[in-house]
Length: 293
Length: 320
Image (cartoon, rainbow over all chains, first blue to last red; front, side):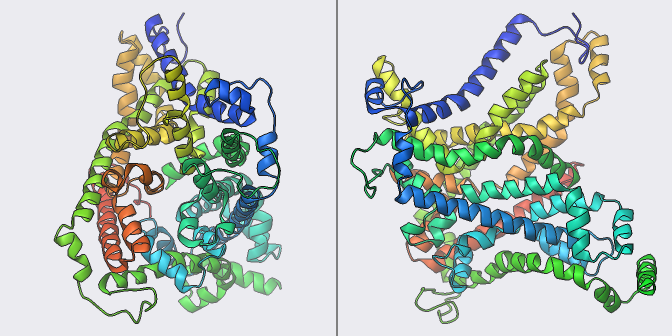
């Protein structure tokens, strides 16, 4: 049988077999760890002990570990902190990125080239850890959540992606709105945004993933452990292997292994929830950004 | 009202004849909308550059930036004289960069060729969905997963112990630190990095494949004469950009794993700056190292872009 796309016969059986094996191994390397993490978080002490620490298929799944970490205490607090940081950070980020992208997208506007240069030049350098730390310190933001939110609000890359979409909106539509008496803000919110919902959502989710995953800025700027976001708690309990639950109320603790895995799952869940959407749209966005510049 | 509108429309049509002040007045609301973003960019990208002055000072937190005494180029002595800690960090950075260039860079290309050769679109999409996922995980999650899979009490070793198989001693082993972080980078990003190659492959004219087939060439010839030439520009571009980034190796990733393996094996330039400056209190020295690293990095990125142009590629900043 001739394949219509490539015009040649399908590859020989050994080649197909080899490709299949490589593909299955690659996918298993990704999936098995996630499966082990999820299953172990649902397993009980008996099964964890008998299987030597990890469980791939829990006999009797229970949410005891999740109930324990959400009973209050460090993990509960850190989850709330992370959710708030992510929501506030990405929300503000959308507003700022969309505004600046719009103000730089009208042909022939005053100062557009130098302003664009200011934006793009930031891609070429980074001031480094120490100068950034000194700035946060001088601003009096040490130990403040704003130190984790403000520096990440603007990203030249995101501004460029949104601006590229705004540039593609036909000038006639904008002129029509202007003739109808719309001011710049109304044009942005009533005309541009509805036309570019998908890209704005993707940029927002991209920045949400960034806020959710960030941990080093918290190491730098946050001194009080009670203000830690989830990633830092994850580092302390799962990477550095500190005992979980020292501060938790309650009598019988679920197995440590399940608790650790449950924290890991909690930090994974939001990413997995937005992942299908990200994958569908952002793959395009990356390519567009790369091709269009 | 109509008069204003007319004037505005006229103004738009002869932009060239407007003075700067008139254009500024016309665009003032537009500029106001963009102002918060510009201020944030300036505050968090340009203002910190001023902090680099402490590279020329003997800074201490209780003195403050302005009070700290000037010391000229003293802080740069660790670089010029080759302080052992600094040299160790520099060598580790370069070795890690080179190893990752050789081992990490080709993986997504091979994976993209594999995905591209799949005949079933559905299978391809499922595989992509699975392989892209780790990209969105934080480094904390990736490192935690690696420890639980490959650590001494991890999934593999408990299983191997139960079956009398050889144990893996890779977590916390300084000799295997570079292979460990390299495999983490591959696990996290190889799938995601295929996107750009797959995009280049999808733009190949299918008639080219047919002509190879008509000339009696098999799939390997199609790969060699059509697919690879099609992605060559992307490969060259990414390779050059990677070279421009040679002084930066996964800071967050390495920082997380320094404890068990020690600094000899794991200190890189970025962690050196953090460990010596913010933790160790040698603010001036750390800032000097960071400044030199930043300058060389910027020059390398600009140079890489120039080289990309020489190769006839568009480069990254060409349009800007």
